[in-house]
Image (cartoon, rainbow, N blue to C red; front, side):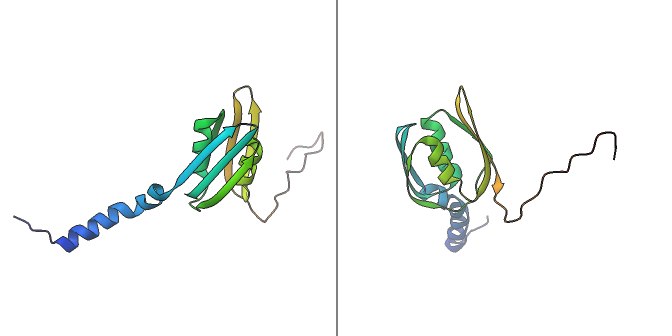
Amino acid sequence: MVRIGSATLSIAALLVTVPLGHAIGAEVRVQGSADAVRVEARDATGTEILAALASHFALSYRGSTDSRGFNGRFKGPLREVVKRLLDGYNYVINTNDNGLEVIVLGPASAVAVPPPRPVPKGRQE
């Protein structure tokens, strides 16, 4: 029979609960209409806030934000709230018959990438 000490069990319990700690502590409250959204966030990631918005409004999203936690309030039209939430990210917001579609591409870069130069007609590369 193998005996496991209480210290070993405590360490194992800590290792299991530490990754969940952020998710357990996060809180997002969404109120209002799409024209006048009020979001209160406590230690919530941008992805968690997008999920809360998607559960209340006609909003779908793809991609995710980093694990940085937001604390504070967002107020305004849904589109503006999403834009403020994603400040510092590259993203696309499409408006369609089903509401807003948000695509998070990743963190914004300080380096601008120019578009490819067009190939002159009659010349192939």
